Image (tube, rainbow, N blue to C red; front, top):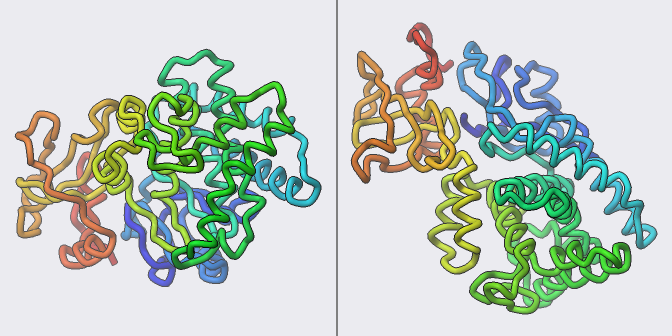
Length: 384
Protein backbone atom coordinates (compact mmCIF):
# COMPACT_ATOMS: atom_id res chain seq x y z
CA UNK A 1 0.00 0.00 0.00
CA UNK A 2 1.18 3.50 -0.77
CA UNK A 3 -0.23 6.98 -0.24
CA UNK A 4 0.15 9.09 -3.37
CA UNK A 5 -1.06 12.55 -4.43
CA UNK A 6 -4.49 12.62 -6.05
CA UNK A 7 -2.94 14.17 -9.16
CA UNK A 8 -0.91 10.98 -9.68
CA UNK A 9 -3.89 8.60 -9.51
CA UNK A 10 -4.59 6.45 -12.55
CA UNK A 11 -7.65 4.53 -13.64
CA UNK A 12 -7.63 0.98 -12.29
CA UNK A 13 -5.76 1.76 -9.07
CA UNK A 14 -7.57 0.29 -6.04
CA UNK A 15 -8.35 2.36 -2.93
CA UNK A 16 -7.02 1.01 0.38
CA UNK A 17 -9.12 3.39 2.50
CA UNK A 18 -12.75 4.40 2.59
CA UNK A 19 -13.33 8.10 2.09
CA UNK A 20 -16.18 9.90 3.82
CA UNK A 21 -18.11 13.12 3.45
CA UNK A 22 -19.41 15.17 6.44
CA UNK A 23 -22.44 12.98 7.21
CA UNK A 24 -20.72 9.64 6.83
CA UNK A 25 -21.71 8.83 3.26
CA UNK A 26 -18.96 7.50 1.04
CA UNK A 27 -17.05 9.51 -1.46
CA UNK A 28 -15.48 6.16 -2.23
CA UNK A 29 -15.49 2.72 -0.60
CA UNK A 30 -12.15 1.00 -0.08
CA UNK A 31 -11.43 -1.78 -2.54
CA UNK A 32 -12.89 0.18 -5.46
CA UNK A 33 -10.99 0.39 -8.72
CA UNK A 34 -10.71 4.06 -9.66
CA UNK A 35 -12.18 5.41 -12.87
CA UNK A 36 -11.98 8.89 -14.37
CA UNK A 37 -15.21 9.96 -12.59
CA UNK A 38 -13.90 8.92 -9.16
CA UNK A 39 -10.54 10.57 -9.74
CA UNK A 40 -12.16 13.83 -10.84
CA UNK A 41 -14.43 13.78 -7.78
CA UNK A 42 -11.42 13.33 -5.49
CA UNK A 43 -9.61 16.22 -7.16
CA UNK A 44 -12.62 18.48 -6.60
CA UNK A 45 -13.38 17.36 -3.04
CA UNK A 46 -10.39 18.71 -1.13
CA UNK A 47 -8.35 15.52 -0.71
CA UNK A 48 -4.70 15.92 -1.61
CA UNK A 49 -3.60 12.27 -1.33
CA UNK A 50 -5.13 8.78 -1.21
CA UNK A 51 -3.78 5.39 -0.13
CA UNK A 52 -3.95 2.74 -2.85
CA UNK A 53 -3.11 -0.95 -2.77
CA UNK A 54 -0.78 -0.81 -5.78
CA UNK A 55 0.69 1.68 -8.22
CA UNK A 56 0.19 -0.84 -11.01
CA UNK A 57 -3.46 -0.52 -12.14
CA UNK A 58 -3.32 -4.09 -13.43
CA UNK A 59 -2.71 -5.50 -9.95
CA UNK A 60 -6.25 -5.55 -8.55
CA UNK A 61 -5.09 -6.14 -4.97
CA UNK A 62 -7.80 -6.09 -2.31
CA UNK A 63 -7.22 -4.04 0.87
CA UNK A 64 -7.14 -5.76 4.29
CA UNK A 65 -10.49 -6.52 5.91
CA UNK A 66 -11.76 -4.11 8.55
CA UNK A 67 -12.86 -5.08 12.06
CA UNK A 68 -16.30 -3.57 11.43
CA UNK A 69 -18.52 -3.76 8.38
CA UNK A 70 -18.57 -0.81 6.03
CA UNK A 71 -22.30 -0.20 6.53
CA UNK A 72 -21.78 -0.16 10.32
CA UNK A 73 -19.05 2.48 10.05
CA UNK A 74 -21.11 4.64 7.67
CA UNK A 75 -24.18 4.46 9.92
CA UNK A 76 -22.09 5.27 13.01
CA UNK A 77 -20.47 8.34 11.44
CA UNK A 78 -23.88 9.59 10.32
CA UNK A 79 -25.39 9.10 13.78
CA UNK A 80 -22.48 10.80 15.57
CA UNK A 81 -22.60 13.75 13.16
CA UNK A 82 -26.35 14.10 13.69
CA UNK A 83 -26.00 13.90 17.49
CA UNK A 84 -23.23 16.50 17.63
CA UNK A 85 -25.12 18.89 15.37
CA UNK A 86 -28.31 18.47 17.42
CA UNK A 87 -26.41 19.18 20.65
CA UNK A 88 -24.98 22.31 19.09
CA UNK A 89 -28.45 23.50 18.06
CA UNK A 90 -30.60 22.38 21.01
CA UNK A 91 -28.24 21.43 23.84
CA UNK A 92 -29.32 17.77 23.85
CA UNK A 93 -29.89 14.78 21.55
CA UNK A 94 -31.77 11.49 21.35
CA UNK A 95 -29.36 8.84 22.73
CA UNK A 96 -31.28 5.91 21.23
CA UNK A 97 -29.58 5.79 17.79
CA UNK A 98 -26.09 5.99 19.33
CA UNK A 99 -26.91 3.25 21.83
CA UNK A 100 -28.19 1.08 18.99
CA UNK A 101 -25.15 1.65 16.78
CA UNK A 102 -22.85 0.98 19.75
CA UNK A 103 -24.37 -2.49 20.03
CA UNK A 104 -23.87 -3.05 16.29
CA UNK A 105 -20.24 -1.90 16.47
CA UNK A 106 -19.55 -4.26 19.35
CA UNK A 107 -21.24 -7.18 17.56
CA UNK A 108 -19.05 -6.50 14.51
CA UNK A 109 -15.88 -6.29 16.61
CA UNK A 110 -16.66 -9.61 18.30
CA UNK A 111 -17.47 -11.27 14.96
CA UNK A 112 -14.45 -9.82 13.16
CA UNK A 113 -11.79 -10.41 15.84
CA UNK A 114 -9.87 -12.52 13.37
CA UNK A 115 -8.91 -9.28 11.61
CA UNK A 116 -6.09 -7.11 12.93
CA UNK A 117 -6.68 -3.37 13.18
CA UNK A 118 -5.53 -2.00 9.82
CA UNK A 119 -5.54 1.37 8.08
CA UNK A 120 -7.96 4.00 9.31
CA UNK A 121 -10.40 5.77 6.98
CA UNK A 122 -9.76 9.03 5.15
CA UNK A 123 -11.71 12.16 6.04
CA UNK A 124 -12.00 15.80 5.21
CA UNK A 125 -11.01 18.19 8.01
CA UNK A 126 -14.69 19.06 8.55
CA UNK A 127 -15.54 15.42 9.30
CA UNK A 128 -12.61 14.61 11.59
CA UNK A 129 -14.43 14.71 14.93
CA UNK A 130 -17.25 12.44 13.75
CA UNK A 131 -15.14 9.73 12.07
CA UNK A 132 -12.56 9.98 14.84
CA UNK A 133 -15.26 9.33 17.44
CA UNK A 134 -16.32 6.20 15.57
CA UNK A 135 -12.77 4.87 15.37
CA UNK A 136 -12.20 5.57 19.07
CA UNK A 137 -15.43 3.70 19.80
CA UNK A 138 -14.33 0.70 17.71
CA UNK A 139 -10.85 0.55 19.24
CA UNK A 140 -12.14 1.03 22.79
CA UNK A 141 -14.75 -1.68 22.33
CA UNK A 142 -12.04 -3.98 20.95
CA UNK A 143 -9.88 -3.44 24.04
CA UNK A 144 -12.90 -4.15 26.21
CA UNK A 145 -13.42 -7.44 24.39
CA UNK A 146 -9.71 -8.36 24.59
CA UNK A 147 -9.74 -7.63 28.33
CA UNK A 148 -12.76 -9.95 28.64
CA UNK A 149 -14.79 -7.28 30.42
CA UNK A 150 -18.47 -8.03 31.03
CA UNK A 151 -20.59 -7.28 27.96
CA UNK A 152 -22.31 -4.40 29.74
CA UNK A 153 -18.92 -2.73 30.27
CA UNK A 154 -17.90 -3.40 26.67
CA UNK A 155 -21.04 -1.57 25.55
CA UNK A 156 -20.33 1.37 27.86
CA UNK A 157 -16.81 1.62 26.46
CA UNK A 158 -18.12 1.54 22.90
CA UNK A 159 -20.75 4.21 23.58
CA UNK A 160 -18.26 6.21 25.65
CA UNK A 161 -15.89 6.21 22.68
CA UNK A 162 -18.62 7.62 20.43
CA UNK A 163 -19.30 10.41 22.94
CA UNK A 164 -15.83 11.09 24.36
CA UNK A 165 -15.43 14.31 22.35
CA UNK A 166 -18.98 15.67 22.79
CA UNK A 167 -17.48 18.62 24.70
CA UNK A 168 -15.91 19.84 21.45
CA UNK A 169 -19.27 21.36 20.50
CA UNK A 170 -18.22 24.21 22.85
CA UNK A 171 -14.92 24.80 20.99
CA UNK A 172 -15.03 27.36 18.16
CA UNK A 173 -14.72 25.87 14.68
CA UNK A 174 -11.67 28.00 13.84
CA UNK A 175 -9.79 26.49 16.79
CA UNK A 176 -10.77 22.90 15.93
CA UNK A 177 -9.57 23.31 12.34
CA UNK A 178 -6.59 25.62 12.85
CA UNK A 179 -3.66 24.54 10.68
CA UNK A 180 -0.93 25.89 12.95
CA UNK A 181 -0.14 25.54 16.64
CA UNK A 182 -2.72 26.87 19.07
CA UNK A 183 -1.71 29.93 21.07
CA UNK A 184 -2.03 29.90 24.87
CA UNK A 185 -5.57 31.31 24.85
CA UNK A 186 -6.75 28.87 22.18
CA UNK A 187 -5.12 25.95 23.96
CA UNK A 188 -6.91 26.89 27.18
CA UNK A 189 -10.22 26.82 25.30
CA UNK A 190 -9.38 23.42 23.80
CA UNK A 191 -8.45 22.03 27.21
CA UNK A 192 -11.94 22.88 28.42
CA UNK A 193 -13.67 20.30 26.23
CA UNK A 194 -13.28 17.30 28.61
CA UNK A 195 -15.06 19.13 31.44
CA UNK A 196 -17.68 20.45 29.02
CA UNK A 197 -18.27 16.89 27.85
CA UNK A 198 -18.54 15.62 31.42
CA UNK A 199 -21.17 18.20 32.28
CA UNK A 200 -23.17 17.49 29.13
CA UNK A 201 -23.18 13.71 29.62
CA UNK A 202 -23.84 13.95 33.35
CA UNK A 203 -27.03 15.84 32.55
CA UNK A 204 -28.09 13.45 29.80
CA UNK A 205 -27.08 10.19 31.50
CA UNK A 206 -27.43 10.92 35.24
CA UNK A 207 -27.42 7.21 36.12
CA UNK A 208 -24.38 6.33 34.01
CA UNK A 209 -21.39 8.14 35.48
CA UNK A 210 -18.94 6.13 33.35
CA UNK A 211 -19.85 7.98 30.14
CA UNK A 212 -19.11 11.36 31.72
CA UNK A 213 -15.94 9.92 33.30
CA UNK A 214 -14.64 8.86 29.88
CA UNK A 215 -15.32 12.32 28.45
CA UNK A 216 -13.52 13.92 31.39
CA UNK A 217 -10.48 11.63 31.55
CA UNK A 218 -9.58 10.71 27.96
CA UNK A 219 -6.74 13.29 27.94
CA UNK A 220 -5.32 12.28 31.32
CA UNK A 221 -1.93 10.55 31.21
CA UNK A 222 -0.63 7.76 33.43
CA UNK A 223 2.30 9.89 34.63
CA UNK A 224 0.10 12.88 35.52
CA UNK A 225 1.10 14.98 32.51
CA UNK A 226 -2.40 15.06 31.02
CA UNK A 227 -5.37 17.35 31.54
CA UNK A 228 -7.67 18.67 32.94
CA UNK A 229 -6.91 17.31 36.45
CA UNK A 230 -3.39 15.81 36.07
CA UNK A 231 -4.53 12.46 37.44
CA UNK A 232 -1.95 9.68 37.80
CA UNK A 233 -2.01 5.91 37.44
CA UNK A 234 -4.95 4.22 39.11
CA UNK A 235 -6.55 7.61 39.76
CA UNK A 236 -7.60 7.40 36.12
CA UNK A 237 -10.50 4.99 35.65
CA UNK A 238 -9.62 2.05 33.43
CA UNK A 239 -12.21 3.28 30.92
CA UNK A 240 -10.32 6.57 30.73
CA UNK A 241 -7.01 4.73 30.25
CA UNK A 242 -8.48 2.56 27.49
CA UNK A 243 -10.11 5.42 25.56
CA UNK A 244 -6.89 7.49 25.89
CA UNK A 245 -5.00 4.84 23.91
CA UNK A 246 -7.67 4.61 21.22
CA UNK A 247 -7.93 8.41 21.02
CA UNK A 248 -4.20 9.02 20.56
CA UNK A 249 -3.69 6.16 18.11
CA UNK A 250 -6.46 7.33 15.79
CA UNK A 251 -5.32 10.96 16.05
CA UNK A 252 -1.77 9.98 15.09
CA UNK A 253 -2.83 7.85 12.11
CA UNK A 254 -5.26 10.48 10.75
CA UNK A 255 -4.64 13.56 8.63
CA UNK A 256 -5.11 16.77 10.63
CA UNK A 257 -4.91 20.40 9.49
CA UNK A 258 -1.50 20.68 11.19
CA UNK A 259 0.05 17.28 10.33
CA UNK A 260 0.07 14.37 7.92
CA UNK A 261 -1.15 10.92 8.87
CA UNK A 262 1.51 8.80 10.54
CA UNK A 263 1.88 5.13 9.63
CA UNK A 264 0.93 2.51 12.24
CA UNK A 265 4.63 1.80 12.84
CA UNK A 266 5.37 5.46 13.58
CA UNK A 267 2.29 5.66 15.82
CA UNK A 268 3.55 2.59 17.70
CA UNK A 269 7.00 4.11 18.15
CA UNK A 270 5.59 7.42 19.36
CA UNK A 271 3.21 5.79 21.83
CA UNK A 272 5.42 2.96 23.09
CA UNK A 273 8.84 4.63 23.03
CA UNK A 274 8.63 8.40 22.69
CA UNK A 275 5.86 8.91 25.27
CA UNK A 276 7.11 6.92 28.27
CA UNK A 277 4.65 6.96 31.14
CA UNK A 278 1.72 8.35 29.17
CA UNK A 279 -0.27 5.13 28.92
CA UNK A 280 -1.15 2.04 30.93
CA UNK A 281 1.55 -0.30 29.59
CA UNK A 282 -0.52 -3.46 30.01
CA UNK A 283 -3.36 -1.99 27.96
CA UNK A 284 -0.91 -0.54 25.42
CA UNK A 285 0.80 -3.89 24.80
CA UNK A 286 -2.54 -5.65 24.39
CA UNK A 287 -3.63 -2.97 21.96
CA UNK A 288 -0.55 -3.21 19.73
CA UNK A 289 -0.64 -7.01 19.84
CA UNK A 290 -3.86 -6.60 17.83
CA UNK A 291 -2.83 -3.75 15.50
CA UNK A 292 -1.06 -4.38 12.19
CA UNK A 293 2.01 -2.26 12.96
CA UNK A 294 3.35 -3.28 9.55
CA UNK A 295 0.19 -3.92 7.46
CA UNK A 296 0.29 -6.47 4.66
CA UNK A 297 1.93 -4.86 1.63
CA UNK A 298 4.28 -2.62 3.67
CA UNK A 299 7.78 -2.44 2.19
CA UNK A 300 10.59 -2.93 4.70
CA UNK A 301 14.37 -2.64 4.63
CA UNK A 302 16.02 -5.64 6.27
CA UNK A 303 19.61 -6.82 6.61
CA UNK A 304 18.75 -9.38 3.93
CA UNK A 305 17.39 -6.78 1.51
CA UNK A 306 14.07 -5.21 0.61
CA UNK A 307 10.97 -7.17 1.62
CA UNK A 308 7.19 -6.92 1.49
CA UNK A 309 5.02 -7.87 4.46
CA UNK A 310 3.14 -11.05 3.62
CA UNK A 311 1.47 -12.02 6.91
CA UNK A 312 1.01 -10.52 10.38
CA UNK A 313 0.14 -12.64 13.43
CA UNK A 314 -1.63 -11.58 16.61
CA UNK A 315 0.92 -11.07 19.39
CA UNK A 316 3.79 -10.87 16.89
CA UNK A 317 2.88 -7.65 15.11
CA UNK A 318 6.46 -6.30 15.33
CA UNK A 319 7.88 -9.38 13.57
CA UNK A 320 5.75 -10.20 10.51
CA UNK A 321 6.37 -12.82 7.84
CA UNK A 322 7.93 -11.05 4.84
CA UNK A 323 9.01 -11.94 1.31
CA UNK A 324 12.48 -10.68 0.38
CA UNK A 325 12.50 -9.64 -3.30
CA UNK A 326 15.53 -7.33 -3.72
CA UNK A 327 19.05 -7.12 -2.35
CA UNK A 328 20.34 -4.35 -0.09
CA UNK A 329 21.17 -2.21 -3.14
CA UNK A 330 17.58 -2.45 -4.35
CA UNK A 331 18.26 -4.87 -7.24
CA UNK A 332 15.61 -7.53 -7.82
CA UNK A 333 16.75 -11.04 -6.91
CA UNK A 334 16.06 -14.06 -9.10
CA UNK A 335 14.25 -16.09 -6.44
CA UNK A 336 12.26 -14.12 -3.86
CA UNK A 337 11.96 -15.99 -0.56
CA UNK A 338 10.00 -15.85 2.69
CA UNK A 339 11.59 -14.69 5.94
CA UNK A 340 9.85 -15.00 9.32
CA UNK A 341 11.13 -12.02 11.31
CA UNK A 342 10.10 -13.52 14.64
CA UNK A 343 12.64 -16.30 14.01
CA UNK A 344 15.31 -14.01 12.53
CA UNK A 345 18.25 -12.54 14.48
CA UNK A 346 17.49 -9.41 16.48
CA UNK A 347 17.97 -6.25 14.48
CA UNK A 348 17.07 -7.85 11.14
CA UNK A 349 14.43 -5.18 10.49
CA UNK A 350 16.08 -1.87 9.64
CA UNK A 351 13.15 0.36 8.70
CA UNK A 352 10.07 1.12 6.63
CA UNK A 353 10.12 2.88 3.27
CA UNK A 354 8.26 6.18 3.43
CA UNK A 355 5.65 6.84 0.76
CA UNK A 356 7.96 9.21 -1.13
CA UNK A 357 10.88 6.77 -0.98
CA UNK A 358 8.63 3.90 -2.01
CA UNK A 359 7.27 5.92 -4.94
CA UNK A 360 10.78 6.47 -6.31
CA UNK A 361 11.85 2.90 -5.47
CA UNK A 362 8.97 1.44 -7.48
CA UNK A 363 9.85 3.61 -10.47
CA UNK A 364 13.51 2.63 -10.22
CA UNK A 365 12.82 -1.11 -10.25
CA UNK A 366 9.90 -0.63 -12.68
CA UNK A 367 7.64 -3.06 -10.84
CA UNK A 368 5.29 -2.79 -7.88
CA UNK A 369 6.47 -5.15 -5.10
CA UNK A 370 2.82 -6.06 -4.41
CA UNK A 371 3.24 -8.54 -7.25
CA UNK A 372 5.49 -10.61 -4.96
CA UNK A 373 2.52 -11.35 -2.71
CA UNK A 374 1.19 -13.57 -5.51
CA UNK A 375 2.06 -17.27 -5.44
CA UNK A 376 3.60 -17.24 -8.92
CA UNK A 377 4.54 -13.63 -9.67
CA UNK A 378 5.60 -12.59 -13.15
CA UNK A 379 7.55 -9.47 -13.89
CA UNK A 380 5.94 -8.60 -17.20
CA UNK A 381 5.34 -4.88 -17.34
CA UNK A 382 6.19 -2.14 -14.90
CA UNK A 383 4.46 0.02 -12.36
CA UNK A 384 3.40 2.45 -15.10
